[in-house]
Length: 149
Image (cartoon, rainbow, N blue to C red; front, top):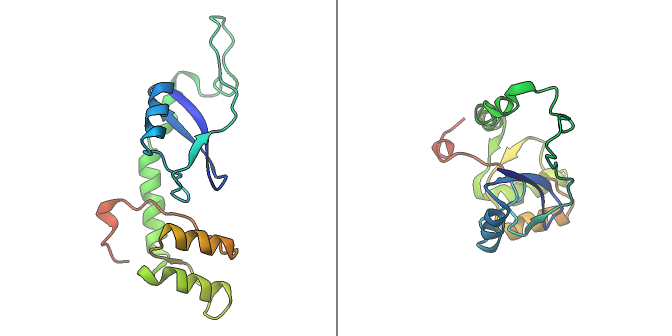
């Protein structure tokens, strides 16, 4: 397993885990990679300092506090992400396809401020960001898409 620091065309940093460097290259060439924040398909490697095992006893920085269960720290990530999505769904108004219009109304104080979610095309997202409206993509699992809160 190899971890790369990645960035999208909108300069959002994130990391990706791959079976090998060739696996990353294959996914990048096939446009299978996308930014988790904005959905941009323009993903590239960011600068990073890889750890190289030289066979000595020193451990890589940051690993000593995790002990033998370093992988265990990620065991409940899926549950935590699901809880976060549930919380966001329960505490936002679904405005559906009217999202860009509603986001603008709130931003320009033409409507009361409130937390909203909905649908927007990549072009609409780009336009909203250019207007200074802060938005982010929300990965909602399929089984929650039709769920009403």
